Image (cartoon, rainbow, N blue to C red; front, side):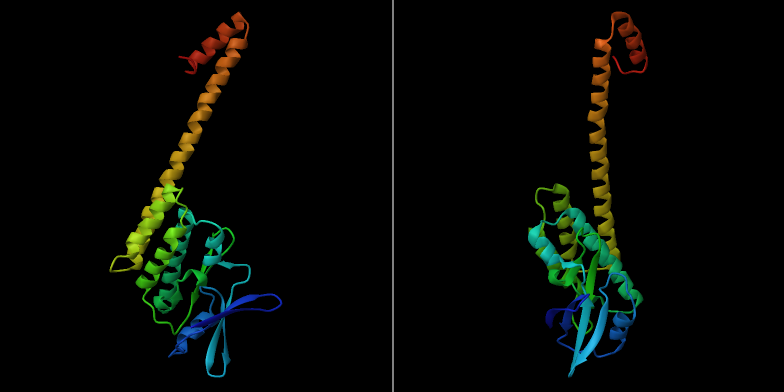
Length: 232
C-alpha cells in the first residue's frame, strides 16, 4: 500500500493506493457516496489502472503525531476505543468488512483535544480486526502516561482484551463499560475528597470568627454553632 499527503487551497488529504484493487465496486460506493460516522470523508480518483483514495484530514493530526509530543492518557485511550466500537457497528450497518479499517497510528486521525477519532476505511485491504487492534494496543502501551495509575489500568485492560483469541464487538463493548465505570468511580472519589477539606476549612473559619467576637457575642454565637453541629 502506498500513501502520501497532498494539499490544495483549502484541504489536506491522505492519499492511499491499495495494494489490491477492490474486487467489487460496492465498498467504494459506500465509503465515497455516504457520510459514515467514524470514518474520514473519502473520494475516489483513478490514475492509469490504479484507484486513488483521497481522505480529507483537514484540521486533524494523526494519532502518531499526537503521541510524539505528549503522552496519551487513559481517558484518551477510552475515547479511542469507544470511537472504534462505534465505527465497527456502523461498518456492519453498511455491510463493510471490519478488516478494511487501518488501525496503525499514522492512519488514525484526531482533533487537538482527542475528543473525536476518525478512521481510514480502505477496501482491498485484507486484515483481521483482532490482529490490527492487538498491534495498535502494543504500539500505545509505551506511550501511556505512566504517572497516571488509572490510565495504566485502562490501557492494559484493553491490551489484555486484545490478546484474546476471539474479538467480538459485544465483548469489546463490555470491556469499554468496565473501564468507563472504573473511571467514573475514580472521578466521584476525587470530587468527594476535594469536598472534605473545604468543609473543614469552613468550620475553622467559623471558630476563628467566634474567637474574635466579644464575650457576650461569643457565647451567643457558640450556642448557634453548637446547635448547628459545627462545634463539638
